[in-house]
Amino acid sequence: MRIVVAPDKFKGSVSAEEAAEHIAAGIREAQPDAQVTILPVADGGEGTLDAAVTAGYTRHDLTVTGPIGEPVAAAWARLNDTAVVEMSLPSGLAALPHDENGEPILAAREATSRGTGELIAAALDAGCTQIILGVGGSANTDGGAGMLAGLGARLLDDRGNEIPDGGAALAQLASVDVSGLHPGISSAQFVLAADVDNPLTGERGAAAVFGPQKGASEQDVSELDAALGTFRDVLAEALGASARSAAEAPGAGAAGGVGYAALAVLNATRRPGIDVVLDLVNLDDAVTGADLLITGEGSLDEQSLGGKTPVGVLKVGQAHGVPVIAVCGRTTLDRETLEATGFRATHALSDLAPDAQTSMREAPRLLREVGHTVASELAQTSNG
Image (cartoon, rainbow, N blue to C red):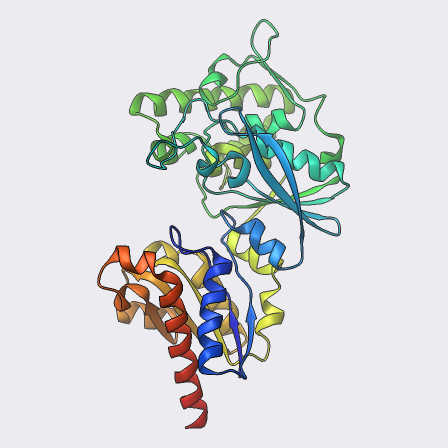
């Protein structure tokens, strides 16, 4: 019996690697002879770096500029000439200072993506020529201006002074000097791992759609959207019409507009995050010849069906003719929808606990229980 376990994180409970380990432990309890392959995955956001490291990439720790300017501990990963940069580590909500309740202190107007640029610069300094930029969970709405500053660009006001970091300060922008951009950019290929297809500005733009999640008031959203428009216009003066058209490209609004800077300046190619990560971990090879593939995440819902981890893993299983089981903390999808999607079965931890708090708190035990159940049922089917 050969089983591949490839879940995403169960947010607030266990990481993707922990989830995979607990499920695998339950499988081995039920079937000690089972061959279990663990491949924690992610959708391009939080957990992407860990997935790469588990797949054989080497982690490189680095202190960079955090989302409100303070130093933060972050990392990037490398395999041969390919680097993986996970934006949530240097520039994400989790990197913000937290209050006494453990909640991030949001700073929609001031947060910067500078640390992300510094990580990319480190990868370029090391000679990497393929950079995978996983975005998601960002704290900023700065259009990627901070990322460009971290890569050597200078953003100047009408007096020739550098403007402060943050999206709101872009209203002061008069010129962009790209002459100091890292020379490695010109010979590197960039992949933007992003699922959202929003443009930079407007009703579906970075500020309007994602700004409120980062603490932006209605007035903040209006000001940030206008500031992003100013950034677009000034960058187009420096780089030409392509920088203007890039603002309308699908994904330009990803990660507070970092998608825009990646497309306009780094000439990045946008790909769905889950596809990028599944390539990183070589799930195709791992699934070949397997008897079962197990995936999952904290919440299996309508958003999951739009291209999140479980459905991405499901497609790989289907391509290889391997049945796929989903494990989740909870699901809002009915049985008919789940069956129509193609999962052989779905196991929700919420069905095994009296309440949501218990299922989250006891997720390790419940995941082992699910692993045990799945392996036992598979053995019975094989023997039958």
